[in-house]
Image 1 (tube, helix red, strand yellow):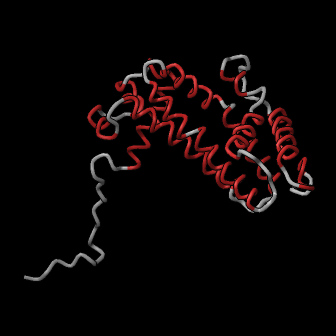
Image 2: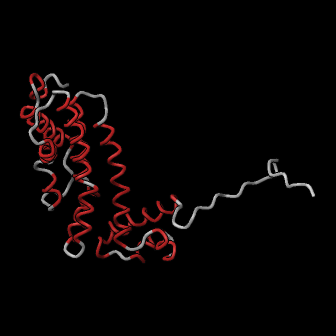
Image 3: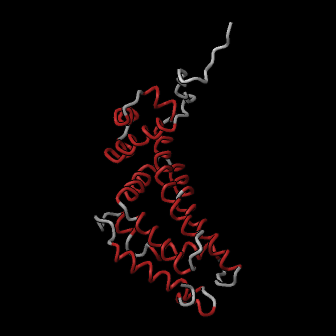
Length: 229
């Protein structure tokens, strides 16, 4: 008997099948539905049934990918955060001068943290922390702490090069981030400011933050941003 020739034009390859819970397109479909459900109903008000309807999948399929609502919520947040950090990390590792990197990074952070989606996510986490404290810890570690760690690497590199003199680099990273968010983030989080900060407000705040930071920690003619741009 002749062997079947599967290399000719009549051969039609079968669509590749993913292992259970491993299809990235299906996972994204569920996470897109989760965005719709969570941002419509909040964390406490959203059920797995709501996500099934929003993502147009069965409950069985949903549980193959995510064990419970907390895991689903964290995966949704993680996907959004990863997209943000691609831009932040690219800025911090670029070949731009220090002051320019700090300025772009600060504006990216301030714009992101002032956006409706990020503010609403923070509010959902805060609302759930009383009953799910571990959710808040993981949210901080994978978000704020991760952003601070990337900035810290940049500062430590600049210290090694002799461009900065910072007694406590981790504290310095926290200080810079707080300066970039001064007068905007908490007002947004608590509802004092109903709209995201205007670009010129962000620019003015971050430019001032960079000047203050370099005045305090830059060496020689880099103080105040001069010589670093």
